[in-house]
Image (tube, rainbow, N blue to C red; front, top):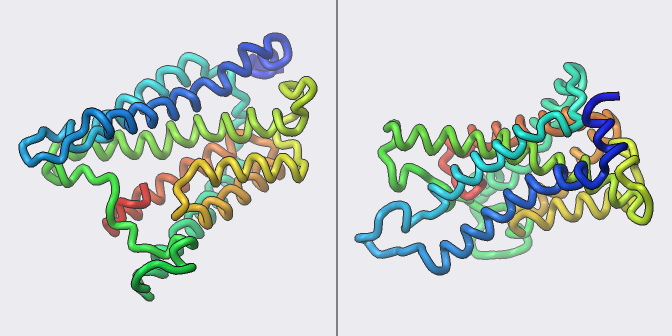
Length: 257
């Protein structure tokens, strides 16, 4: 029995807290960003960059805070790293993010005007979003620092906090919500688990991403059930977000992240 398994069996309250807290901390920073946008941000030409775009400094602080928490509790998680399942996760991640990016690729070829049913499928340009180049000289030290932190946030922090919460914690909770759910094995399948976990994952994203999130969330659920391996799901998420970041940099579609 690993240290993570032993913690789950002998001290479930601590196990629950360590499963949920990183995700809660991550989401808490998004709330801070909303508050900053309402009371602190400024569009005035004379405003400094940290007021024009609070996300440019809130995201790095969010990233470091979550990394510190995850690092302190690292041995509490049942990653069960495996080369075989990590490779499978990488393939799933590439396929999943390919489906997520397909609508905006279709937009490039089709370029429909106005709004319609295609909007709900994510067929949009996605050019307006997080872009350090608006405030820092591209290729400069500040620009590189912002990009490194952005990739670190997307490919490491998001992959860890979301998979620990959605797959390691919530799948178990829904599988046996009225009993000792923390003793459930990782990746246990029921249709209710699939509906709640995948639905929650989809709703955590913007409506423009719902179609991609449905496909991606379903693939991640299948990988979790098939592999029974949390590490594989994290690798899938890390590869997917890393490829998305590369796509954003290559195409300028900053609205994707």
